[in-house]
Image 1 (cartoon, one colour):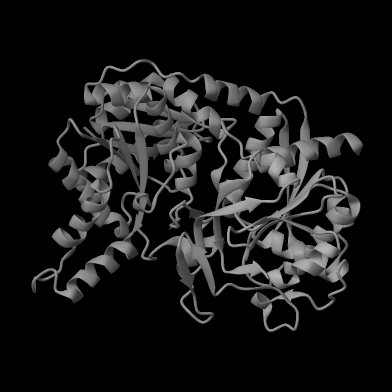
Image 2 (cartoon, helix red, strand yellow; image 1 turned 180 degrees about the vertical axis):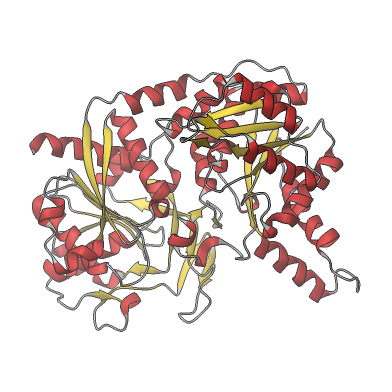
Length: 541
């Protein structure tokens, strides 16, 4: 029997619903349960694929090619359960599907309304594609009181009735602010938030109270009294030194015990050995390295959430602290990289779209190649490294990408067709932006005697992609003659996936996004190897 836990948020945004959901999922998993996590997003975009990273943060891509919310990255990193298309939906997707049905006549001429048609579509999504999961944790995006979230809250209210108390639970995340002038924690915002939820017909079964200060017993009793929640179901959520400490903290507060009691389940205490080991490695490292991330969205670090976590995982695997130096690639375009990069132990150029900042990324790749500094180019970062090699090693001075406009030397060009399994995927250069990329997991074959083959320890890999442009294989011969090895190719031998310099301490560019598959308890081999190379570099400096 699958049980459902619905997670809502109140008072303010950015309290960490995604992290709380992921941590609870990890705790239930550690108690022996099979879990899956889902996210309902109230915005009208069909998916986050066409949204600016400054608006929404990173776009997380699943194996089956869905462009989803970054919270799904938290879910995967904490539980190791691969997310799917069926784990994330938006208002835009729900309404698109409802309108499409209406146009087909599926509703037999009925007047289409939010209740029941939209709410039924949401409910169907929540309970669809189930296997043998013990728990489905379903996070509702936004804040209680937001007008766009009302259909989702109504849907989960109805689901609570449909499923019954033995299969449904509501967890509300809220804020207990500290007023410094008064020297007091204030419970009133939480009371108002729960009142708002109650007005929508939802009684929370557990309150997770985020606070910068410990919650005294008196305030805890007050919250329980006014919010009609058991006192031991009022859980404090204090700031943690590391996000990977959160499962340990929440268990100590009794969060998973409250869930088991609500559903009348007797389960063994969770084995948190792995999380405790990660926490020790994170808080008591044996050394540190400095990594320069040369990107274009450094003004909002959520744009690189999976990337920063994967670098941390590489640090955990090598028992070192990773210090980040976030650099806007545009600053190189009118200046020398030296003053920004001379003290760094590794340079990473992440993915991105568009011409802005591209020349700065090319200069960063040149700097790393010439000075023997470990370089990791991901997606766009690989493409810029190839253009740099074409210009400065292969003598193709006009080398460029068709993404930046017409060019006589399209070293990087738009993909119009590629194989996905046995099917040929095709795209038009002037087609819609949304969902027209090479998305999801694709196979790659690694060259013998290559660095990447030794890193992975196997000849065939599968990694997740999100891009429209690809390195042009017509230039492979000239680039390899200049010293750049194409060490990973698509199975049909057409699409370059990995490049490296055999004579460089560590210089690898990949067309895919390895950061999406990294876990704190299972760091991605490329990030583990990159941080190890950075450690070696730190000893030379």
